[in-house]
Image (cartoon, rainbow, N blue to C red; front, side):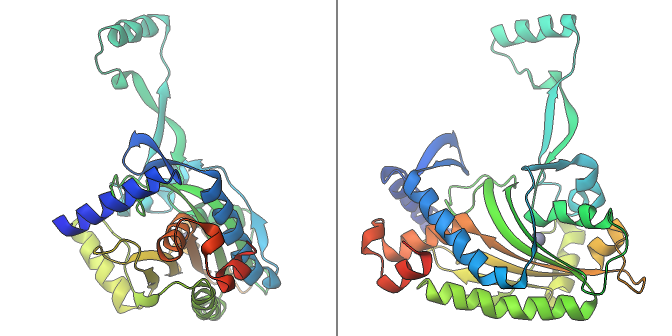
Length: 307
Ligand code: ZN
């Protein structure tokens, strides 16, 4: 991050806090949201639903946690160990509790009294979908189409207000044949661009890669780009900073199909794809480009959002 970008992030974050749209929680990337912020989040979600509802997706809603074994099985721990979050808790005896109280009273670190639970934090909204679909057995002719909306966690503390550690993703997930999945992604590339244009935001769609960890990760990222497997819709949010990915379009090929043994009607390994809207990022983009007072946003944007 350049000094200029860093100063710009800090200035924008200070402005959002001063306006009361975000509420400081004392940790970079962890914020409360104001009523006005949430109002836009809700309206934005309704606008996304209006685009996707005609396809009659199955609705699934999950808590912000998934099974730790599910996180492992999905390959997330292998590919993004630095971003993953797990939940730990105390599981000791009365004696251990006494030791803990003593440690706390001395102001010393108590975290070695914690043990991992079976719960991990959800890294992306679609991760709960694959095991749920797999548990139903072989897909029908039409495959599966799911609308999912979940709080996600990624351990990447940042002063960039658009890079939160806890945020929400609204996703549509397609599971089926290679052809069904490709058609889905092409459709949503058009739809998302149309929606973001209608919201009056300057956007460009570009090839992208996931932040795979380490040396092996560099190779995975390169082959993901080469195969055009990930696109991002980028919007400038912070002046002087890099553009922010507000929507992502992911073709996972048969990665999740293999991980969860999901089969198409004919017994082939299913392909999957998802389109994910970062609702906080889009909300921040709206405030950045149209100002902090909702009543002065352009009429066309207010109309799309039903404000
Ligand atoms: Zn996804």
